[in-house]
Amino acid sequence: MNLVLLACVAAMSVQTPAPKTQVMILGVYHFANPKRDLVKTDLDDHMSPKRQQEIADVVGRLAKFKPTKIMVEGLPDGDANNRYHDYLNGKYTLTVNEVDQIGMRLAKEFGHKDIYPIDWRNDMDFDSVTSFASAHDPKFMDFFTSKIGEATKMMSDLPNHSVNDNLILMNDPANLKQGLEPYIRMLELTDGKQFPGADLVSGWYTRNIHIYSLMAKEVQPDDRVLVIFGSGHAPILRHLVEVSGNMQLVEPNNFLKR
Image (tube, rainbow, N blue to C red; front, side):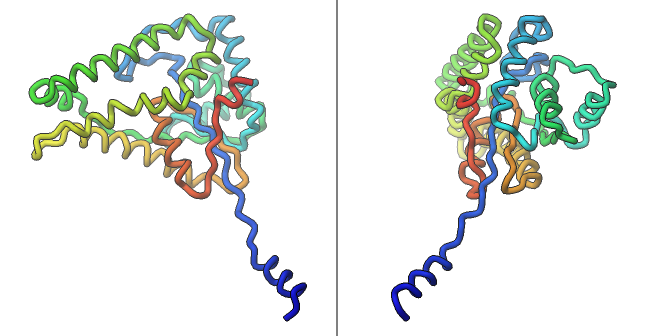
């Protein structure tokens, strides 16, 4: 076999890598501020003309990603997609919720027939964690209290900045990593028989793994997927995308900073 033929055979044997699904995880704060999260604060009215202009600016920046699917923090058997269909038909007025303000606006702009609610919920017992830590690990309680204080301060400062600047701060990889630290520290809460920290953290990971599963079953290799969820979910979802092998993580700040 001559060298030319060998080269042809080698070229034929090289397989073109399959395209990876582009996935952007946009961590957000809840515009409607339902106060269901551990850290609660008061926000200014995001339906005000000033905030609406800022949200329109964010939507314009994210539109440069050109998403083919938009996935949101809503239960699959809920009414989010029905509300979106009503919005398309002029029968629904957008509420302050970020699902509406970012997700539905973008989906309509790109002519999407549907949005994809992919949330999955379970119960997590924070009381057992704090009770155990108070009795057995006061240093953890000091750490946890300081972290709650830091998060509360950050949330209370949101009204002083634009929506875009707030989202840039929340989606900074270093900040996202710090947001996961309290959960990892909770794993140390055990006496060898009780594992309240591990129980809570496993519940948090379980929720996010289910969310990822619902996302993964909907994507195709050539999709550009925008996932809009509370920023606390972002570190785990980002990690799952990064190690998936068939998805490529897209940094939201590459678009929000443009």
